[in-house]
Image 1 (cartoon, helix red, strand yellow):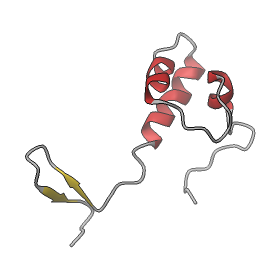
Image 2 (cartoon, rainbow, N blue to C red; image 1 turned 180 degrees about the vertical axis):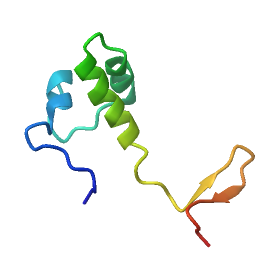
Image 3 (cartoon, rainbow, N blue to C red; image 1 turned 60 degrees about the vertical axis):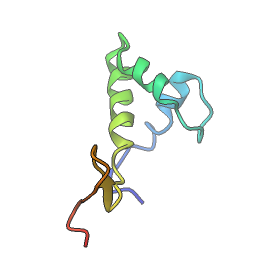
Length: 75
């Protein structure tokens, strides 16, 4: 379970605004276009979704040179 508390009344609003069914993944291209919307609320929701995609990081990641780097004290 996530530590981020989202109001129950706000859950699913971005899906509804983008015309997607609840539970479907929102394509990154749709999030990018929503992040540049003229509606400030839509921009905030889209930016939160883009940031939330980064919440769960792996213990290691590949660097640009192909070597694994350690994150968060991984051994």
